[in-house]
Image (cartoon, rainbow, N blue to C red; front, side, top):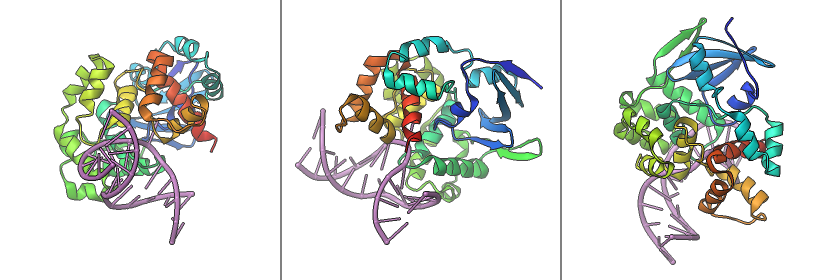
Length: 269
DNA sequence: ATCCAGGAATTTT
DNA sequence: AAAATTCATGGA
């Protein structure tokens, strides 16, 4: 059984913090569908067992090569984030596939995690490729070119997001994403927001979760709540102010602060 | 039943 | 430029 020695990593916290919607726990194992493949993983203390993908893929997807000490050093100066990091130690920002991530967060708009998972599974089942893994069946997410049957898309329970996704799939070119990784954050975000169904928040999710832009700070209802309580005396504050405050405070690790605070705030409701 | 959900696009002020 | 309104639908 292939194994990786790890530190500062939690499989559960990373998979169950609202950044990724395509994993299922079956028995001891987490089955994960991403980047067009399926693999499984299980953690025992400082050991991560896996099967179905090679070592470099697993290390990359879980960001095991990241300089996590520097993340912690930067974020632990803040009381609230330090507490969240302590409580959810090892939560990492995963490296998703840019198009899969875009699709997922277009579907996430004004929805909830349970429903998002359902929508994505439905899309994968209707449009994706069937993948058999250990006798279980999974489905890959369809590439943009395959999402052209609007009748079938209507059966996926997307509501008004259906049109966004349909139009996004029509306009997106996969090669664009590579350029977006190299670009400055602001320019990449601006270009992403030209995609139908991608506004500020979804753009920040894509930048953070799949394009390596650590300064992205997605502001949703939960992080807005948490930030207002912690840093704005409980006062209603515009998303833009919250985002810029966070990026001044945490710089290139703002995205990590966001993910810890998001998960921490959501868990205490 | 009523309310909310990891918002975006459009219209109005 | 900022604030208000509209947009479908599943789940609690």
